[in-house]
Length: 88
Image (cartoon, rainbow, N blue to C red):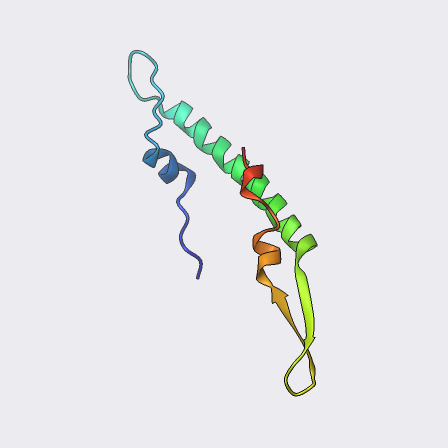
């Protein structure tokens, strides 16, 4: 099972991002817009990362110690298929 990644709301709360309207203080509507925007942004990058992983996945063929052909998936070819510096 993968590690649980925080939701956009949980992430924003850890960053102490608050929007004030000058009177009432914290404005939930603006927070919701920020949260929805972060989710949309993340989805765009995850979608592209998955496409890159499919295109860059490398299957390495080799002969095992018994002389039989075998293969394995190069995990680094997937993990490195979408550099984090593309997220700006």
